[in-house]
Image (cartoon, rainbow over all chains, first blue to last red; front, side):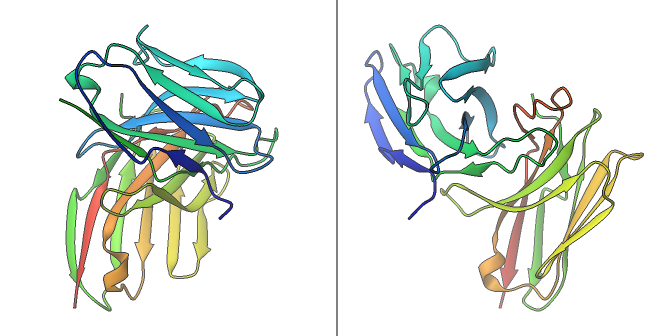
Length: 116
Length: 114
């Protein structure tokens, strides 16, 4: 399977604990994105990387959230001191961006987080 | 914030009928993409239409874009039970050439019954 891969698919954690999600993008894709989706809503942008550089962060990404893409390949999204409001599906996506061409973004299956 | 709004919010049709979903957005865009999401799963990319295109086809899918009205429509012809899913439009409104992110609508839930 050469799609976007996310791990774990499901995570249940107690309030106050830290959690980390991993994303492996499609090979050779230079851009990687994180989105968050709650029930009944569309995904909301959190942050994106071009290669290893984090180029944009949403104001949804509080200081408890940190994302990295250390070698420009896989990425991690860490949530510290989780709160019940963090319960959502965290979606990773990737794309091969070239100037002057459409930027088709491919999503993974998502990581469900439940904070109890 | 959600830029796009899909209409209707929910649609129920019988297998073999056509399904039309509409999307309206607020700002100028570089392109618009449609995605499908089965319950509890990730998003599957369906089609991308650029701001200088008016219509695009892919199999049973037909997408139109009217930038003057800031709206798009997705037509699924000869629907099948397997088309049951939520459908989202997503706009790329980033500065020209950056294509940094997509802004999604709230989706249309399509139910196709036998």
